[in-house]
Length: 141
Image 1 (tube, rainbow, N blue to C red):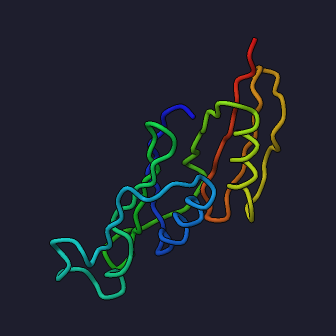
Image 2 (image 1 turned 180 degrees about the vertical axis):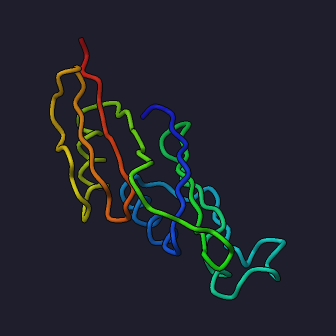
Image 3 (image 1 turned 30 degrees about the vertical axis):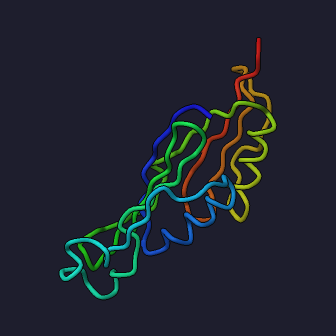
């Protein structure tokens, strides 16, 4: 995969989402901190203390998927929408298919993986957590 370092915000289910992503991509979290473990733990609302303040999941050589819970009790107004896509440039058709199949499980597929007029093998979907993804592999010329 080429580099990408997206940061995702969730409404209390960051841990579930990142365990799902870890099951697809493999690897281990390089960082995971809960709000209760921060220096400001005493100021954190009770409902947010066990939520994720920051998590990082290395993907491939130089990429990191990062995320956080954005609790309303701490003033966040998370709105899951169509304003964010994570685009992954796979290194092979096989990798593209594996990632597409894994990440789209339980989600909504907009475009199944297929050869496109611009030359890429491409597909897009929204995963079961509302995050939109585009997977592509550039066919050799």
